[in-house]
Length: 355
Ligand SMILES: *Cc1c(COP(=O)(O)O)cnc(C)c1O
Picture (cartoon, rainbow, N blue to C red):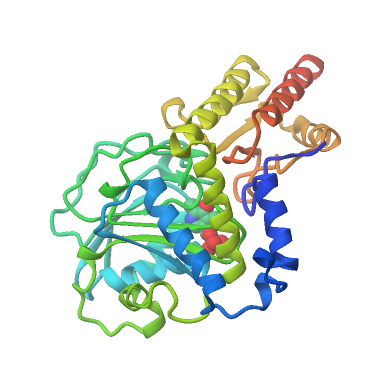
């Protein structure tokens, strides 16, 4: 029995994997593989249409918001967002909450001025900054809703008076939010939605077309919208698996059900963590991520021992990101509560033997 706490690519529902494997051999009883049919055939068009409409439905998006499936992973959006939204000479506001946000800032600087309006770097990114001001003339504000590496997550969005852009790669579809308050959301699929190779983009069309720079065809969101997210050959298999995952989310009861499950797992895990003094919970309590929990061990010499024990018990992906060390357990939608129960039992047992 394995328990998959990988941060990304990461766990997907078993039934989705089963359906995806069937689609590779014989897609919808066509006698053909999903990998060997044209992307403009009705067979695939139906997949894309269903994927886009499931996103709209599950997120309860207004008609102002368009849904696209794009190439390039979330990192491409670090560049594509300012390309579409930031004029030379204009300013964009960024909140610096960790490694991914830093990369986003670096790319935006190629297009205009960047003002980092808040940062939690002063405390190793172990909290989410609050109560900061955003210049009224900023082209947009960019935040990272869940910090995959550091283990922090926004619990509230106070609302700023400029367009709100969010990197939601690692907590997309994990909880109920008013998604219409975001003007642009992007998420690489491989954390909570599907396999690597596709990027979900939700954009309020009202914020587009306001810059005057020339945008290469493939990078201009408006072209993708015009062509129904089929400007060129889309990553068909990654979109299919994402669509199957979206079907699974809907069948399970949508985001209300995902949130309830994720709350249950997070509560179980953090209660255990807080009860075991051998472990050090590094993140400020009110900003703890329900997707990626980071922690370490006070006695650093025991770190490797704990990882060995986890490995022996079939717990995968417990090692922290190479840039921060320690431990990280990712508890995405598809991770069963029982896996968290096993992890907690292993932690309690370890604390008893080595505490
Ligand atoms: C994983 C991740 C990224 C990078 O995604 P790629 O698809 O590898 O480019 C960006 N932002 C966040 C928050 C992530 O978790």
